[in-house]
Length: 195
Image 1: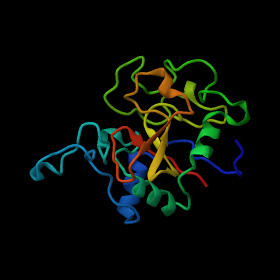
Image 2: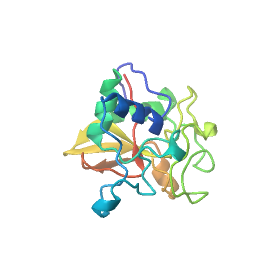
Image 3: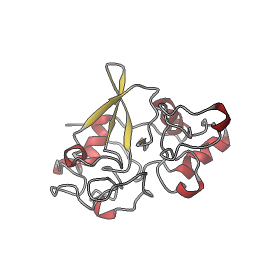
Image 4: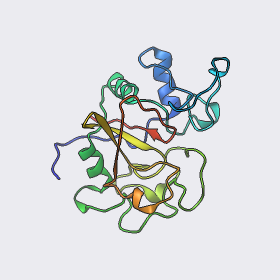
């Protein structure tokens, strides 16, 4: 795989970073509910336990439940863009090393925020698993949240990286791509930017 030179953010966009963009008026507020959570209008100011929204207890976790347009807007507001699926995969494979995981050849275990070792009911603070970093220090390219990319196939965006709720090690492989409708908002979906 050959891609043009690019820079990738070392972490997923955090709740605090996204909230700052929303306060500035450049981004819309992060949703507090996933798209499938049906709650009464009277409770719309409360969050779904799985969505990070602007929760005070998850400021250092990746923002979640944002859709593709919100992620794209955030990156553009910061002079960046969403990475393509090819860029994302190249970074996660440690460039020319071609590894199946950011940390190397060993299967997923305790290197990432996922449910394969310890059942998780939400995200982890970004960078909490340095043993899962790439050799260049990019955090959380496996686990924590599926990351939105700029790649769209058959009308659906491509997300990569596996979320905190994944418990199947084969889904933590960097080549795994999942499709999602552009308006989808999931508690296990976030993003990072590139330029």
